[in-house]
Every structure is written in structure tokens, then in C-alpha cells.
Length: 264
Ligand SMILES: NC(=O)c1ccc[n+]([C@@H]2O[C@H](COP(=O)([O-])OP(=O)(O)OC[C@H]3O[C@@H](n4cnc5c(N)ncnc54)[C@H](OP(=O)(O)O)[C@@H]3O)[C@@H](O)[C@H]2O)c1
Image (cartoon, rainbow, N blue to C red; front, side):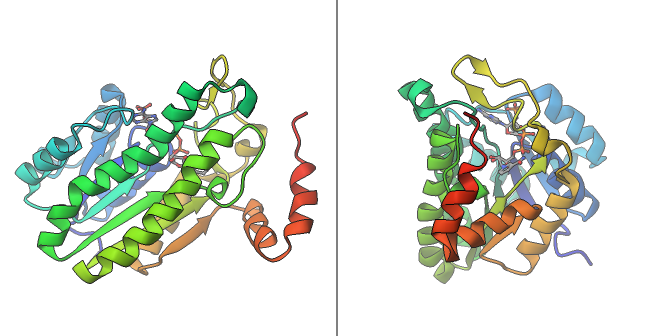
């Protein structure tokens, strides 16, 4: 029997990319799903693809920029399913703009979507997970959470912040039976670069380096293995992941390699 059979799983960013691929794979494996993102029509499309009966699926559209109703959202899940086993904090927005040209409002928005929303949703499900004495919090960070990169200052800062918060959270909540997995994708072929914020609105272009990257489906399968193995942190992607190891063990060499990718 699948590890995920009958588990109640809340996925944010489920209307596209990695979140959509997770939803489809989890549905195949018998999960009961709550799908969140802003675009309700896209959530409906994904829900139809899962072929789950109404009893096993719920759509909860909302904007990660405003998670003030997080407690009510979590309560509505409990109301329908009676429990919540896994929260996948996945929804996010990237950046393609220099720090100098990024307004402080955009910096705050990047932090709100990519960091505070994750914290707030996790706090909203925590009382239920504690009561159950079990739960799994999944945090989709990035290799940008391991090192800064050109045109990613606000995004990379938010992803770094996730590690500080959730590494501490993991230590504090394991006594309550709660597990925390941080996932650091490298390059995955999704719409992330198209939707990235610039100083003039959405970037609207697929980064050439993402064209031949790992598929969202493969990424999702690796994440699900990480959950089953009770991993604390995993890197997912291709050869770009080497940069994480190089930064850690050979920081000067890393400095030279990363500058070769300058967009200027
Ligand atoms: N693809 C990569 O190479 C890569 C690398 C490292 C990390 N990641 C991370 O992986 C996660 C998933 O991204 P993806 O690659 O699958 O990109 P994607 O295809 O662009 O999906 C992003 C998802 O986040 C949702 N979202 C964005 N802004 C939102 C908001 N304000 N409120 C609610 N939902 C919002 C989008 O839904 P709506 O537009 O419908 O709201 C969409 O479902 C993100 O956290 C990203 O940082 C991706």
C-alpha cells in the first residue's frame, strides 16, 4: 500500500509546475488533497486531472500575499477531512531584477509570498498536527536558499530565511511527532521564470537554462521519496546542484564560477 494512501495533504502553488505535479502523483498514490493557489480555474483543471471524487478533494484558492485568514483556512480543512497529515508549502514567485531597481515594496512582497506565508500556514496547521501527534511540513526552498545570485536578491533572501526558521521549527516540534523536510530545487522546467517579478512587471520569458531542465514530474517523485525517507533536506535538479557543494567546501572557487554567469 502506498505511504500516501488516505493521507490528507494541503499543497500550495498547486495550479502549476511542481505543485501540480505533486498533486497528480499524490492522487495516483491515494492521497486526499487540498489544492491552493490564486487561479481557481487552474485549480479546477488540476482537480479534474486528479480524477479524485469530491469527497477526497477540496479547492482553497487564496493569495499568499495575504495569509491573515490562515487559521480559518486550516479550520475549513479540518471540517471536511477531520485531520491534516502533510502541508506542502510550495507556492512562490521568483525575481529577475537588480536590487537597486527593486522597490522595497517588491522586496516585502517577495518576503511575504516566499517566507511569511510559509510560516503563517505552518502555524495554522500546527495545533492540529500536535493534537494528532503527527504531521509533516514540506518547505520548497531553492538552491537560491543556499547562495545568492544575480537578479535574485529579494527571492534569495526569502529562501535563505526559510532555512533559519524551519531548521529551528524542526528541532522544536519533533517531540510532538512533527517532521520537517526542506527541498532545494535547482533548475526545474516550470513557469517560474515566466512569472518572476522584474522592475517592470512579470519577466514573461522562460530562462534558456530551464528549457532542458528536470521535469516537474521527476522533481515531484523525488520530493515524495524524500518525504517517505524522512529526509531533513534534499537537493533536486541537475548539475547546477554541484554549486551548493562547491560553495560549502571551496568558497573561493565558487566565487569565480558564479561570476562567470554574470548577466552584465
Ligand atoms: N522551477 C524551478 O526551477 C525552481 C527552482 C527552485 C525553487 N523553486 C520553487 O518551487 C516552487 C514552485 O514553483 P514552480 O517552479 O512550480 O513555478 P510555477 O509553475 O510558476 O508555480 C508557482 C505556483 O505558485 C503559485 N503562486 C505564485 N504566486 C502566488 C501568490 N501570490 N498567491 C498564491 N499562489 C501563488 C502559482 O499559482 P497562481 O498563479 O495560480 O497563484 C503557481 O501555482 C516555488 O516556491 C519556487 O520558488 C522552483
